[in-house]
Image (cartoon, rainbow, N blue to C red):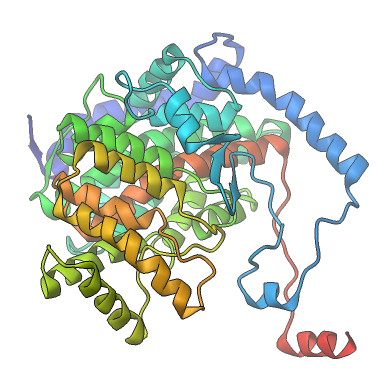
Amino acid sequence: MVFMRGASFISKLRSHAAQQRCLQNSVRWLQVQTSSSDLDLRSQLSELIPEQQERLKKLKSEHGKVQLGNITLDMVLGGMRGMVGLLWEASLLDPDEGIRFRGLSIPECQKLLPAAKPDGEPLPEGLLWLLLTGKVPTKEQVNSLSKDLRSRATIPDHVYKTIEGLPVNAHPMTQFATGVMALQVQSEFQKAYEKGIHKSKYWEPTYEDSLNLIAQVPVVAAYVYRRMYKNGQVIPMHDSLDYGGNFAHMLGFDNPDMQELMRLYVTIHSDHEGGNVSAHTGHLVASALSDPYLSFAAALNGLAGPLHGLANQEVLLWIKSVVEECGENISKDQLKDYVWKTLNGGKVVPGFGHGVLRKTDPRYMCQREFAMKHLPDDPLFQLVAKLYDVVPPILTELGKVKNPWPNVDAHSGVLLHHYGLTEARYYTVLFGVSRAIGICSQLIWDRALGLALERPKSVTMEWLEKKAASA
């Protein structure tokens, strides 16, 4: 394994390549317009867009006045839960069966999407292809996309320098979002918009920005990790590994099982329809024609909140507190007492419940299956398995929770901890890298379909009181 120390050394090695990459990127979206190869994702997308534009046009003209439901005061005061208000093509969340990516459940994605090895976890590049086209890609198409993403992953010098301007102990999400903002100066959409590009072509530079961003975020995220926890010893990208495998490698983990875990992790965390905080934030900011870098940086700031992406950090810390107080071999009765202690202390049990789901999160289940296959004897996994039996009945008895079942955050930290990624403060960055795939996929379609500036109506409490009185 080869190490390089510090941003200055990296800068010297990469500055010329970064300049060349910037020049190439500035014309890439124009150069590939005439490509018709089946292996070219952009060409596949360009063939689909006119059909979907006509589909949306017909939907608006023939059914624009169809009512989609009633809005209650509870919805307005309750975070707009259950209120239909967004078009999001990439995925759809069902309260009972969980997320579907372009109609495919997580087990179906595991079965149908190409993997790095037989019976392995799906490659994130395959999911990206699926989210953008609605089609399951071939292994050849995925390999071509992997190669394309690697070619886009060079980071300009100024990005590292910008991150280095922050204290090394700044929260990893602060450093990560700062790095994404620093990448924005290379935005192809901003350059094209300033030159007067026609709105029918907005999706083209948006595609280039989005693919560049998806390619670059693992490199920036890995840099933050190595800077904070490994004395700045940075590991360069491998020239033949896939997206998830390379991310694990750059973090410093070359265990094949850890690379498989990262492929699974990125895939299942990539998208969860459009109403969650990070996805909605990205869509909202992009609706003002902010470029993908600005939009995704805003999404990351939403993801960093304790009620959203930071929850996976909170879960592992809570599990560790259980172990510290009760030991690894805690009985179910002891665990029940600890759960009640947490609840009676005015706190929540992190990793349980969901704003939409009403059954166990399928993303939890596939991680559970991964653990049973690869680390069945891990003490923390065994504790998580006990929690699965103990917590839901207690939350049901409490009577205040609509969904007492575990969500995706209840399991991910234990898997990462098993393979040596023990720095819980960093876990939300992994979530952020994954979410780039879903947010950017939808952003491309937002521009292709010409979706409008988001501008919902707000009201005052007095207005609500008058409306309620008149009703």
